[in-house]
Every structure is written in structure tokens, then in C-alpha cells.
Image (cartoon, rainbow, N blue to C red; front, side, top):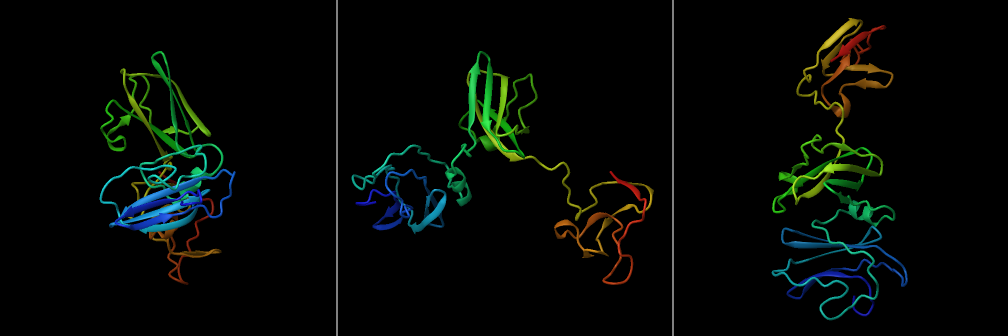
Length: 269
């Protein structure tokens, strides 16, 4: 900003300015992480300024009617920054507060980075990964199409398609992947590993069947039971229906409390 050498970002049109100054007392000869986000919604631009992952300043301004030059390290001919930029990034979407906090945290880069090496006719892939996540290696020969909607999991014609690859610690690698064609592009998609079983029992019983050798069988319906923990009238997450061994007919104080018989042997499959 003028005369101070601080980091500042602004949007300007017709003399109306919205700007943020995320310095918050930052001192000379220190290293800091600055982030600026810019979002236009309903004709209003909101800009946010962050210092070391913490939101410091927010302002709004009008959208620009034309596209001008992007000035890094100073505005058009003045207000030069007094410092050195060790790393500079521009993203194609505005990061959330949580995402800014992640990239500002010291340590391994939290942004997913795919590294590709080539040896003869094979490719080696390496990326930073997270436990509980799986990855799809998508590929195409056409950069004009949208990777998220049109690119398919890479298939080298020998191994199964490279999708649903579980993380192997903080770094996951694929080695000796056959290269198909002289030119090919790759992207990596990260997603949570889905649960082994996921079913909504409110709309039906999930087509499960019951086999009971002795005691109380499984039953699907609305629970109405009572025990040491109190009355139970819903399933997990307040679901109105569930599977249970004796749903009960307690009805607020009279009837079956929902206990299952001793030595019950019953299967839900």
C-alpha cells in the first residue's frame, strides 16, 4: 500500500474501491503467508485478505466492466512492495477459509500435486495422499474437454483402469505404467473411500433377508423401545425406520420394551 510497503489488494471501478490490507502489524525481515480471494456474486465483488491462514480483512466493491492488467508487487506505476516473494500461486477458484488455512500451514504441501516421470515406454506417478482417501487417475489426449466430466480413468490396455486407488500413507506411487500414445494428459481426482455398506432404510428394507436359528429375529420398521439409556423412537441420525432385533411396542410406558431374547442367533443378509 502507499508509503508502507505492506501487501494490499483492491478492486477499482469508476472511482469506487474495495480493498483489503491483511498485514495486521507484520514486521520487517520476517516471512509471512499472504492470501487474497476474489469472488463476484450478484454484481458485488467480495475480496478477503489473510495473514498466515487467518482472515484479517474483508471488503466489497463493484465488478469491473473491463479486464485490465494484473499487477503483482505494486499497482500501475506506484505503491511497490518492499519484499521478496518466495512462492506465488494463482488458483482458478476462490479458496475457502479452511483451504487458505491449510496451504498456510508449514510442512508438506497440502495441495494435491501429481508428479510424472517417464522411463522408456513406461510412466511413474507420485502424489501426496491422505489416509481414508482414494484416487482416480484420469487421462485424455484432448485438453479442450473438461477433465471432471469427460476424462476417463487411464487404461493402458494391460492393467485394470487406474481408479479407486487407496492412499498408501502420505505418499502414493504408481510405477511401470505403460504409456499409450505419444501425447497424453493426466489429472488426479481425490475422493473419500466409500463405506462398505450404505443404505437408506427409511424408504425400504434394503432387500435384506432374515435367517433366525433361535431367539428374536431381525425386523425392519419404526423403533419404539426403552432401556437403561432411555426411550428409543428413531434410528441412527433420527431416522424414522431401522433394522433391529425387537423394535418394541413400548408406546411411552406400556408394552414391549424392545429387549431381545437370550441366546438369540439371527442373521441379516
